[in-house]
Image (cartoon, rainbow, N blue to C red; front, side, top):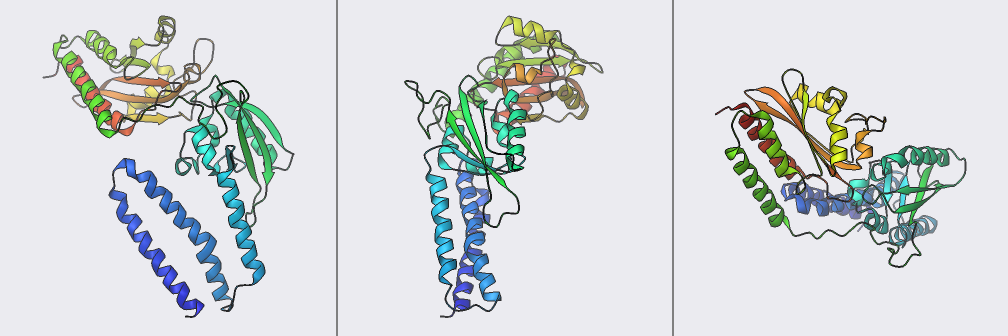
Length: 378
């Protein structure tokens, strides 16, 4: 069999596998990460095997592969295996700190899948205070200004320092210099500290999709009971009782802004009374996210909010999202009779699991029921 025939068979197999991956898009959400990993593997196969093979055939080199090229590929595979199996968390990023690759230890350490992290800024997994410094140091290393190191904090565990070491590398075939980032826990030598490759975040048990659906069903049932027993048309009472249902078990912060056309802050439930009192004094018009939601009537789900000023600033001038260590938020309109009568915002903070799409959908439904009860609409 000639090399052309072998290439044709290999290409046909690849096309068949791609068709299977396309068909797998209808799987449930829990199975999609496996499908994504398989797709990334197939893309690597094209880049590392099929494309060089095609170039050799196109240049008329149908004979045996030169020994040097074969040795280079073996060296490439060896280096890739070393990168993936290296016991310390390692990431490859570009000059904008966008992740190119994460090794296995890094995915465990950050709690983020490699498929999700690739193409996103590594700074998105750091606390807001560390993001600008990390981006600046990564850009300096990429410009060839030498290796750097700094201490950062993961957003899911802001109290634990992490040492980040950055050095410039130039992979073969890459047009630009990339930055190799090595992460190490700051308390690596302390008793009970997580070892290399171990996640520093608290391990939250995954009780399965059925349990999550049951929790949402219980929340919806409790909310329905609350709205049915609250005095219809009494806006403040309805929203206060609904916020109490959501506060604690579902969200760390619950903020309700109501009124037409001007919004006013009606309810603020926070981890402490002091924090609630401080945010209650803020004008809703100073919160770009609230203003946008009221204008567009479109709910917003943000995980690791990219804009720290999206919910305005405290009286001291600090961004509210940074001050509260918000890791995810939901902002939904309270709509009745086609009119936005208010905006409800929920925060989750620290190491708490972020809001899911299913929770956002359930909250969107509950917000409509809240608006109807508050307006007294039958």
